[in-house]
Image (cartoon, rainbow, N blue to C red):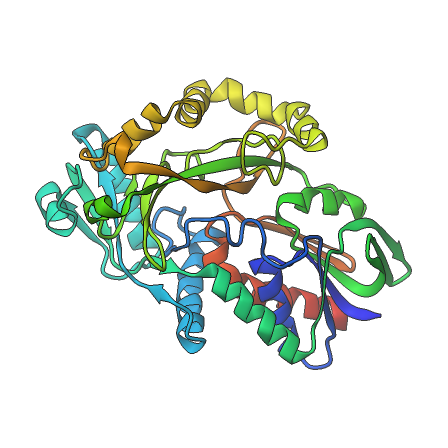
Length: 398
C-alpha cells in the first residue's frame, strides 16, 4: 500500500512526485501507461520557457508561469540541463493590430515581467533583421529548455528518493473502498490512500473512472511543425510570435529556436483523430467518437468557423501555413521548410464550446485531479507540483 499514487508520468506528474517526496513519511508511486515516462505533451512541444506575457492578470497561468520560469531555470542550472534565455519578439504586422499589442503589453506589465519593452518596427529589425513588424514587444525573460532532459532528471531524482515508478501500467479501474483506492491496471493491482490524476490527454476519463464529473471534455488538438533548413536559420535569431488571438489559448504559428540547434515553425491547431494522434493516419475510434459526439465541439465550430477553416487550411495546404509564417518573416519560402513532427495538446472544452484557458484542478476525498494543464504547464510544472503536494498533505493529515 502506498500513500499517494500519481496517475501519469509526464512532467507535471513527475514534478508532483518530487514535491511529495520532500514531505516526511509519504510514500509515492507513479503509474505510467507507456513503456517510458514523458512520452506525450511533456516532450512534444515547442520547448519554450514562458514568462507569462499574454495570460490574464490574476489567473493561475499568469501566477504560476512567473514563478515557474524562475524555478525551472534554476532547476536546469542546478542539474546542468541545457537552456537559454534568448528573448522573444511578439509582433504586430500592421496598424490594425496595435491596440491588441498594447493590451498584451499591459498584461505583461501587470503580470510583473521584467525588462518588457514596446519597440518600433525599426527597433525590431535591429534585433531580428528579417522580421516584418509595425511594432513589437520585446520579452527578454523568455527562452528555451530541454524538457526531455528535465523529465529524465526528475526520474533519476525520484528513483534516488525512493519512488516506485511503474511503466506499462494503464489504469483500467478505480475503486474507492473505505479510505483506500484499489487501482487496477494491465500490470497489476495497487492500493493507495490517495490518487493524483496527472493523466494529461486522458485526465477527464480518470475523473469519470474515479466517480467524478470533470465538467468538461478533453479535445485533442494536433499541432504540426516545420523546420527551417540549416542554410536558412540565419533568418531567425530569437523567438518570433504573432499576436495571440483573443479568447483562444493557441498562440498561432511562430518561430522557435531549439535546444541543440534548429528553428521550428508552427504549430497550427487542428482536431486530432486520436488523443495521441500525431499524424493524419493515426485514428482511434473511441477517441474520435468522444470528440465528434461532444456537443461542445460543434458549438465551438459554429462560433468560430473562420478560425477552424484557417487552421484546417494550414494543415492540408502548406502554402497557407507558409503565408502565416511570411507575415512574420517575408523572406521565408516553401523551399526553406521541411516537416518536423507534431504534438497533441490536451485542451479542455466545456459543453458550450468554450475552450478553458486557465489551469484547472479539483479535489474530492482521497483524490486530486489535474484536469486542464496545457501550456505553460511545462514551464510551471515544478510550481504546480508543489501546490498539489500541499493539497495532498492537507488531505492526508486531516
